[in-house]
Every structure is written in C-alpha cells, then in structure tokens.
Length: 174
Image (cartoon, rainbow, N blue to C red; front, side):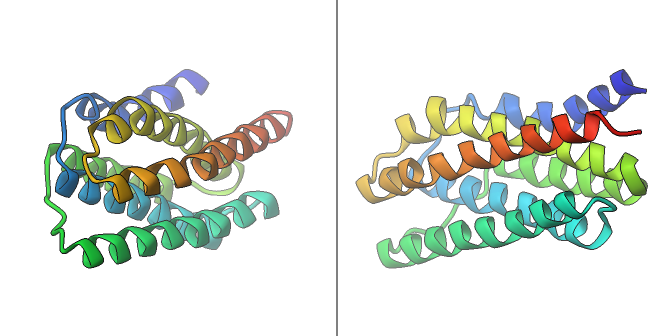
C-alpha cells in the first residue's frame, strides 16, 4: 500500500516538477507563485475540514493561513508593479496536479487521509523549495519579486520540516 501511495503522489506532482525547469518571465513567476499557493490553500482547507488527527487538522489550517498571506503579498506586489500574471505550462500543471490531489484526498478518510495529505505536503514543499532555488529566484528579473521569493523561502522550508515531523509521527500509528 505504501508504494502505491508514493506512486499516486509522484503521478500528481511530477508533471509540475518537470515544468519547473523551464525558463520563466516575471509575469509567469507571478502566476506560478499564486497558483502554487492556491494549490496548498485548497488542500489545507480540505485537511482542516476532513483530517482525523488534530495535528494534521492544525497543519491544514496553518497552510491556509500562511499561503493566503503569501498570495496577498504577491498580489499586492504585482498590482503595485502593474504586472499581469501570465498563465503558463507550469502554473497550468500545478493547477491540474492540485485538483487531482484534492480529488484523490476526498476519496480517503481517517488515518489514510491524514497520511496521504501529509505525504503530499512533504513532496510538494520540497519541490516548491527546489523550484524557488533553481528556477524562480534565478529567473526573476524584478528585484522586488526576487526579494519576495527570498523572503518566503524560510517559511516554505519550515512548512517542509513541519510536514516531515507530522509524517514521522503518523508513521508510528496504526
């Protein structure tokens, strides 16, 4: 069962991960940032409502709060800079993967839901960190956009660490 869950996660996240490697413009980065946060907000809302474990439920609530804040910062920045986010293959892939993840999670209940949600959060946050480091920051031309990416990176790393802690905690339970 564990390997099939990992296969599902890779299937949901891998298309977006391969798209990260493309060179992107600032308007495309803006779209990617908003979409990546929205994907995590949607999953977090579901976890806050459906998780059986209180810590997983709190983590879902944290993801909604934190990623909503980042999205607001991104929207405020692009509005001030008069940049229109540009849809692109990466943002489209992220949206499709996020929708597929939420659909998959909706089919699960109890501890199975909790483990699947947290496992996806581990994989997703690691891939977002990799994208920030390898693609988004190096590709950003606007200094303020680059600064926003640098500013939110530690929070994404903290989310990854928190998700890994939850994952280890859940692994020891029946």
